[in-house]
Length: 178
Image 1: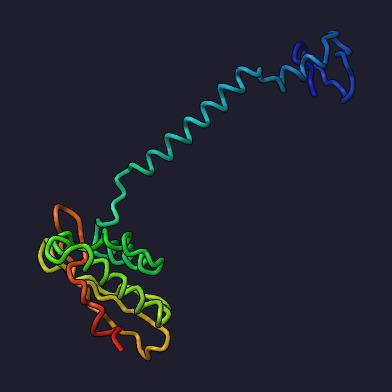
Image 2: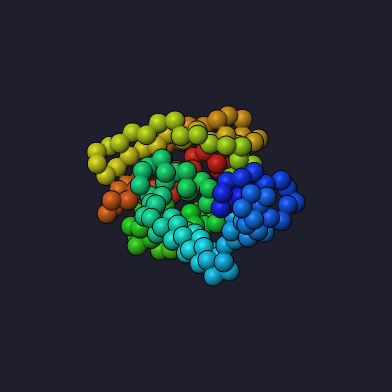
């Protein structure tokens, strides 16, 4: 440690500088010292900064319907969690209008049960083919225990108001029915 007044080296435990007589306790307090008010302001600033970062992430406009691949990934995550309502946000809104929400949620529940009864091992997106600006098919390889093969399933998607949605609820019927 060095004296804050004259720079003289001060041995640990000495209470005063041997050259100029300044108290070493004051220098320790000066180096350590942050006033309680300053500490409160620093903590308040940290809390506000964390809150701003969290709000920015939450409201950043992260859009899970931004690409066909993102829709399929998000849909499968919700299906694996057995969350039909969460999965339904990735289904074409037109299907809700055409068939009703009971039918759409029922189809998602059936798909979820079919996946659970066969134990989904995994899935991978192998190809995305855009069919113009507002349609696409996504080749998704689905691996299911006790199924015998890894089927490549084509899932049809549509783009509505800038967001991608699964446009066909029956994509799984040919592959998962007994």
